[in-house]
Length: 107
Image: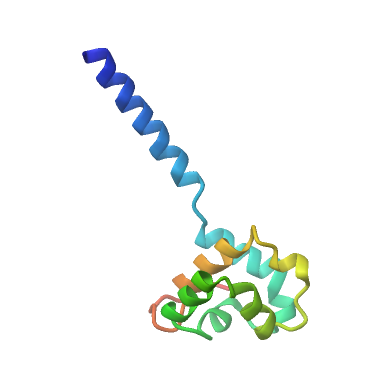
C-alpha cells in the first residue's frame, strides 16, 4: 500500500511540474513583442497593452481573433510575427498590462 501511494504522489508531482512548463509566459510575451511587433506597431509595449481592457483581450483570445486584432492595430506586422505559437505569449503580456490591470511594463 505504501509503495502505491509513493508512486501516485510521484506521478502527480511530475504531472504538476510538466503542466507549468506548458503555460504561456508574460516575460516571453514581452520579449516577443519587442522583437517581432514593436517596430511594426510604432508604439512601446505599455501603450500597446493599454489599447484594450483585460476583458477585451480575453474576448479576442476566446474568439480566436487575437491575430486579427493585432494585424488591425499593426497593419505593417509580418505574418510570421503573428504565428499561432506566439499568440498565447502575446495574450499573457497584453492581459497582464491591460488598461484596467494597474500594471506597467518596463518596455
